[in-house]
Amino acid sequence: MNIILHSPIDGRVVAERTLASAEEISASVDRAINAQLSWKQVGLSERAVICHKAIDYFVQNQESIAEEITLQMGRPIQYAAGEVRGIEERGRYMIDVAETALADELIEEHAGFNRFIRHEPLGVVVTIAPWNYPYLTAVNSIIPAIMAGNSLVLKHSNQSFLCAERFAEAFQQAGLPDGVFQYLHLDHESTSALINHERVDFVSFTGSVAGGKKIEKTLAGSFKGLALELGGKDPAYIREDANLAHAIESVLDGAFFNSGQSCCGIERVYVHESLYERFLTGAINQVYEHKLGNPLDQETTIGPMVNANAAASVRQQIEDAVAQGARVGVDQHYFDQNEEGTAYIAPQILSHVNHQMSVMAEESFGPVIGVMSVANDEEAIKLMNDSQYGLTASIWTEDEELALAIGDQLETGTVFMNRCDYLDPALPWAGVKQSGRGCALSVLGYQQLTRPKSFHLKRI
Image (tube, rainbow, N blue to C red; front, side, top):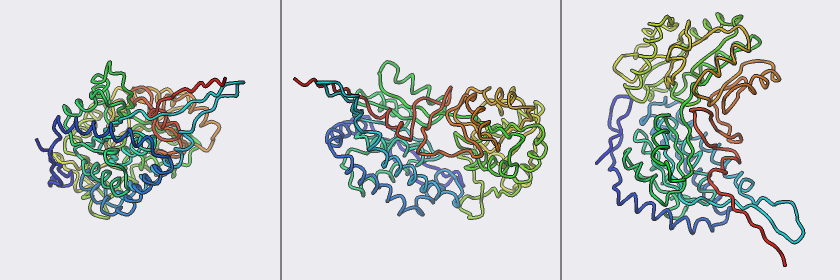
């Protein structure tokens, strides 16, 4: 059976591949097991050299990789190269902190005893990566898993499977031993077979809440480790002391970049009543500065969504909200390529919204935000927490102490002040509620990819 990758730009066929068979899946896991036994004996400094060389590959091939990203998932070409810069930032950081993260932890001295904790690799790790940030989401687990001494099998989204092949080429050119990194092109059924293999030790999944639930059910009773980075409905709160121009520009970037297809993109905005009208007017005016169109055009700032069905889902959310009393702020006829039945949809700002509307409760994953007026911090906090998701939340204010006080009350994995939609590799990436479980990036990201082994040595 084959999979065909159609570009959201115009439906063209970008690539076609054959799905892996059950025998190929089993053989891949066997290779991973055997390779890991040797790889875990390789010194950390040598692992680092190889992983840095793999990152070098992406930097050296930035232009062609950027074009592939655009063809596969529709991100405007002027922004696509930024993903390679992100790979370099995250990848090199995780390589550089490995020595600290994986160092033996010595316990206080006790006469006649040597006691310490060693961080051992798990064995075989499977990473299931999505299409929306096809390299950035994958590198979060790939580099630390390999640096920690694991072998890894990558199953990439069938919308962006060329990225898996790029990773393989990068590691091959870097000199990584055969079998330490592999990829497989799979459908849902064969993906379940892979993660259920008795010798797979850990699964890292980035995707939808529905997908995460299916994987949890699939692995129930297997006692495998599992990390889930799932959906978001991330809020922004514009306080009365916010720098309004900065807030408008940054919040809209966080909402509409990548056509809104970001798990940590801004989807809900709460504005203090004293700034509400000014924020709404300024944000709507700024939307018209965007150009919706073919992402291969250097002038395009918003490309298509991943497919026509995704765009139709966002259009339906907007229509449902309007039917319930919401008001549209942006005249979508202004954007020539905004056509129903296609993957192209213009950005939209809705006012007069409430939490009974799906656009304020369910993940949109598209270029639309709802804006509500709030009277004070207490109301904003209540509304920000009124969600089944909890990935990030941003506070726009000049008062850092107050931002910290508000942040302490928010049910979220990351609190931003005066910025949004960014992963700092020095900070752990985690979500609460239905946004997931586990922790990637930072020194803490190594904890889920290793197991503690205690050494309790008595001297006679």
